[in-house]
Length: 404
Image 1 (cartoon, rainbow, N blue to C red):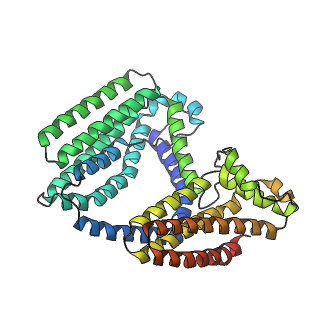
Image 2 (image 1 turned 135 degrees about the vertical axis):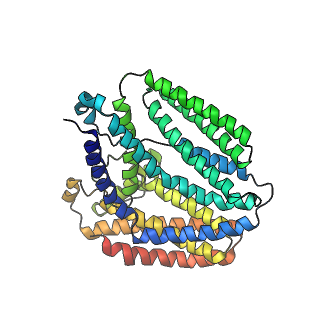
Image 3 (image 1 turned 90 degrees about the horizontal axis):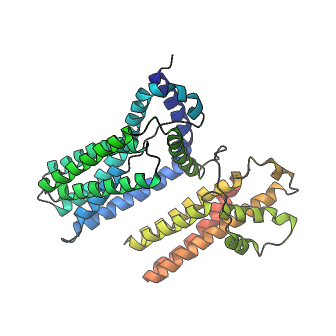
């Protein structure tokens, strides 16, 4: 006898074990300290900026876009797997309870996004509208929770529609209506907000009507959506630890590969110099992660007013880049034929250490150029010295001993 509730609990337990296994590596001590520092610094300067916020600042538009996006982005986690399309098909008529549990689970795991955004935008709201009562903002947050649940149901109903363009069109329309509704709530235009809320409700009714016109469940679409989200999670986890069953996408990038490998001598002891460079460019998200950290670190350096905090952010993002690029050492661990290379472990260590050192120095040069642009000569000299020293000590004192 098929028990949908028991099946959900078993699937949920397996999913929880799988994700918690990698979350402990993602939120390790190093990353937690770095995130705490970044959040604390941003919160401090956010409060300072709010004290000088101009009267014409578009607070209502920002809150409307933020809340509208969070409400309309409501993915459904079904926890389905590829074999389910065969083995669960005979029990499709008994899966209603299972999907109710997955909807509840999907809503609960997204509550933190609502609370986080509400906490971030709350000070901006009160700074821009000091005469508004706190209950007014609480009402907006309550509406956000309600619309979040409505949008989750609408997304679930639209997952029966196989036409990609129809789903995207519906998503865009709902985002616009959500954003406009929150705009009117922030502006205290309750009549207009009520009208847009009714329009949203009518759209949800139409979504329900469309779903009822579709026979059965789009198993392949549900499984594809869940697999995509798990692949995204695995790619993030792979930056911190080895994920053996992750199917990595390899990109050609001929120009970059040629540029990075053209000067490598054709010698036996340069085998891993070549391998690590093409792995950096072609495999996973290494290059994208490296460039994103340079960009985000550059924004922090540019906008943080205190020069010494600029220096600290520079060193922090140097550390984050090198720490995550360390996983290059384990990237080819499951490929046994690499053990046939007549190359010593010391030579392989030297190749990765050399690459990491080069990448950190490139990052230092990028930050130095930014200090030059903003005219901070003291910061430029300080980062030039501390950046090079930190890079050398981190690579040779921290990374190298762990390459075993």
